[in-house]
Image 1 (cartoon, one colour):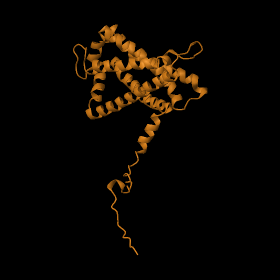
Image 2 (image 1 turned 45 degrees about the vertical axis):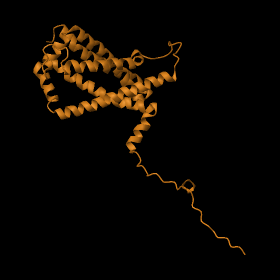
Image 3 (image 1 turned 180 degrees about the vertical axis):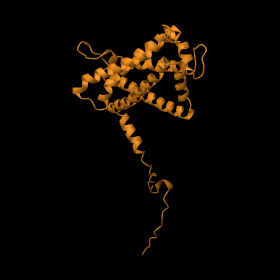
Length: 250
């Protein structure tokens, strides 16, 4: 009776069963990062970011105006105020970085929302007669660009001393009149402050809606209050170059 001998066959490398290797588990992203991404992925979240950053920037603009108006008191008072701001360079740079991040977030969110809105309606309205929109609301994007350009000019002008005759470090009592005696510099400042006032007018009114705090009963008061704040801030800032040009200052 023939005997069969079982022979073991060696599998080729490509015939060997492949055991899937499990990938190492990645730690989940921080909850804060996930929330920020979710916030950015929808228009409501971007509007909320614009509202929060807008509040911060509005408070800064108001504080900046209050400080600037000290020039009407006497030169030493506003110079002392400037020295106080520069007394702690580390703290000053922390404030500048926070302000810069706030500005960039506000600009980025606003720009994305603007183009998303245009993409949603690529064809404009044929009849705008029935669309209730104020001039500040229709020009928010362009007034924002104007303000960005002004901020760059303002920092170069009164912080770094560009185009300021006889510039002195931390001496606004000398630098402000010297800068605004130049008619073109005063004109840039005045036009820019009109843009700031218009931007604040609509921005302050609209931020309550962006944060879900709008109530129809308070809409007229909010609209009036936003217009008043924007107008007062614009006029307060405009008064300084006008006072210099008319000889009341400097």
